[in-house]
Image (cartoon, rainbow, N blue to C red):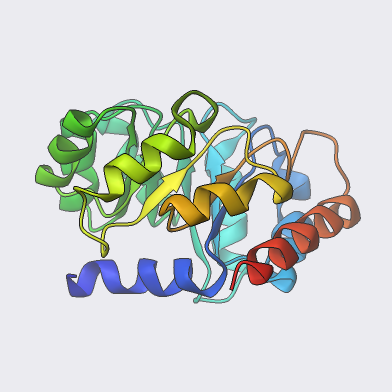
Length: 212
C-alpha cells in the first residue's frame, strides 16, 4: 500500500463506511457532517449532482477534523477533479470506471474510488491508480460476486459495495469479503434533519461493530 493510500485506508478502517450525502444543501451540510462524525463516520462524499456541491464540500472540509476525509461523488469528467480539489475535497468517487478521471485524481493528489461492475473493470481501474474499488450497483452484483472477486483481488485492495446497503444487509456482504460500504438513501435522503441522520448513522455504526 502506498503512503498516499494509507490515510484513506486508516479512515476506512475506523468505521468501514462512506456516507453519501446526495441532495444535501450547503446550509445544512455542517450540522449533518457533525452528526456523522460524532457517530463515528470518517469518510463523507457529496455527489456533484447535489445543490451547490462544491460549497457543501468546502463547508464540510473546514468544519470537520482532519481525520475525516471529505470528497465528491458522481464525478464524471477529469475537469471536475480540480474543482473538487479547489473546494477542499480529497476523494473522487465515480459511478463508472473512467481511466482519465482516475488518473486526474491521482495526478491531483486525491484518492479515487471508481465504480466497477466486472473484474475486467476492476483490474483496469487498479492499473490506472484507483485506491479502492466501488462495487456498483451492489443490488445487482450481490454477495456471491463479492466472494468471486475476492478470490482474485488481493486482500489489501478494498472492495466497497454501494447501492441498497442497509444495516441488516451488511453481514452477508462482509462475510463474502467486502471491506466496507458506501451508504446512500438508507443513511441520508434530502430533507432529513441532522438528528435523523445521527440516528441512522448510529444504527449503521452499531451494525458494523457487530460484524467484529
